[in-house]
Amino acid sequence: MAVLDQPVFERPMLSDSDLERYARQVIMPSIGEDGQEQLLAAKVLIVGAGGLGAPVILYLAAAGIGHITIIDDDLVSRSDLNRQIIYREKDVGGSKAQLAAKAAQSINPQIQISNLVTRLTPGNVRRLVAAHDVIVDCSDNAETRYLLGDAAHHNARPLVFGGAVRMEGQIAVFQSSVPGYTGTACYRCVFPAMPDAKQAPGCSEAGILGPVTGLVGSLQALETIKLCLHQDSSLTGSLLLIEAGHTEFMKIATSARQDCSCCGSNSAPD
Image (cartoon, rainbow, N blue to C red; front, side, top):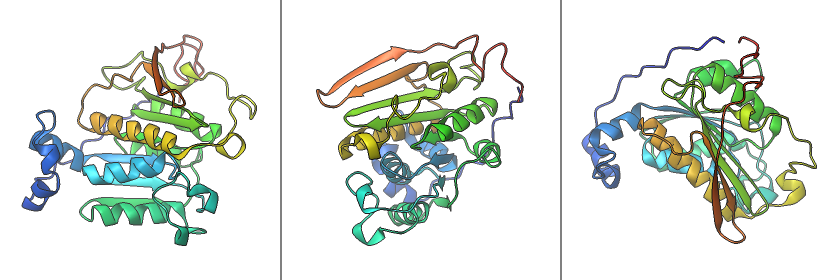
């Protein structure tokens, strides 16, 4: 397995405008000016600009994540509007990645936002993952999730995973090859086999209530900010299950599997 070095970015100095914009964060002892500078130096890749991606993108832009890349090849449809709060009626038919980037830039013109109107593929995933500090999986299909999980492990990048359908949600942080967390579960350790449509129906088949995606996406944004601040995430080595119908949360421990095809002892080298 080839693991790339962690990226090193020059930390920007806060301007007077920054201190005003982020005043409610900077006064927090857990963030302060040093922490805000870390956020402005961070690079985050968001895969998917749908129900989960919408709150993630807005909250990360508002918090001052300095470099955000959004990748999504989908177009806005009217059925997206019940949960993908970044879009409006007039946006139907437009590119999600481009519209999401524009919305985030309008919230915070001082940060850098890139958009890629394409799918994540074996040909581009390694380069994209390696170029960012934290990866946020807001995708809606199993193929992309496994591709992203493998790439995050092989490039030593933290992966913030989220999923939602009907009234249920899941969130976890995977850092299986990140220094200090090596040996924790990777994505394939927790989800070893790709599910079929009956096991994991999508929103178009099973339905989804908008606030459920908002809840999961907000938690993904929170964990991403903590990772950019180099703070521990209690969701590393855990999977948080949300049952929104009865407002119940359950955290279960996860562990690495020796027979994992991605990080196990018999896994193929990258």
